[in-house]
Every structure is written in C-alpha cells, then in structure tokens.
Image 1: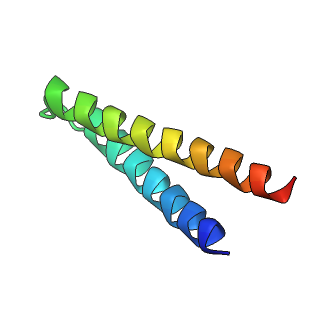
Image 2 (image 1 turned 90 degrees about the vertical axis):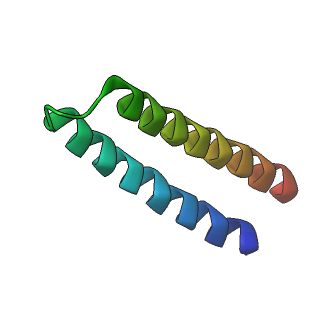
Length: 61
C-alpha cells in the first residue's frame, strides 16, 4: 500500500509541475532556463512514477 500512496503523491506533484509549466509558458517574462528546469523536474517525476508502477506490477506477479 505504501507504493500506491507514493504513486498518488508523485502524480499530484507531476500535475503541479504541469500547471507551473503552463503558467511559465504563458508568462512572457519567464526565461528559457526556468522552463527547461520545470520540464526536467516533470520528466524526473514521470520516470519515477513509471519505475514505481513497474515495481508494483512485479510484486503482484
């Protein structure tokens, strides 16, 4: 069950980063470095979500 809770938290974090990225892209004064950093963090979270999903499915089988 701990994996499921962690997955839910990561999904919330991913959604928050998506919102942050959307705001940054719509704000003309946001520099490219900031946008790149948000995208990098979002990708890291997505990768962690996938790793946990694979780990969870491995424990079920």
